[in-house]
Image (cartoon, rainbow, N blue to C red; front, side, top):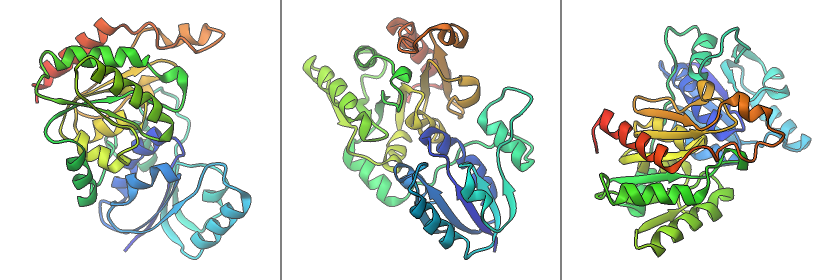
Length: 310
């Protein structure tokens, strides 16, 4: 049985995008060891063949990095997917190392991973959801949901929170009146944003559940499986929503949707200003301001009509 090492990227969204490469490596089974940032741990906990999961921040102290290397070096891995980069992956005894290489063409990350493996088609992200995650999702909200994912590590990537609330109000009083609004966060940094949006909606008589600090990423994935719509920024939650098949509308500013848009059968990415315009500004602070509420509502309705309302 093959021994597989997966060194996950620190960025949560990139970690989800790289799960397609992991699923490809696991298609014939294997014993899996994962190294990831602590926040990404739930994404991998139910992966098939998992025998060890090591938490390691990108800028971990040298002593922690060295101890992890010593533990991993006890195994000669048949294949390592090195999406992390740096010294750790290069220092280990590995029969085959798979990494991303700069390409001549601008393309999606799922296509980059396909080329790295020599696969014939893009490697779509894959999540493995366990019963604990499904139970947590069921306890958090029953039935279909409108999921908002307004957070993100970079403020320049966040659409204004009041606009998320405005679109949610319109959808909840129209074609998605049957769905409950839930506001999700991917990390502790998002809790204040999710709370403010839920409170704004509640104040207007539109019930909303603030789950910014209530669900881990795998439970969020289980909840997103039955989402009527996920609306969010370029973050891990929109990547997860697309991976589990939810209609997903993602708003982009300073990052490139051609490379990292959520990858799935029912997705749409939109922006208000071009990357060139944003790059020409002295600050990226207004990168998301040009995306209007009416345009987002229209795009959401188009996405729903194209795939059929849930």
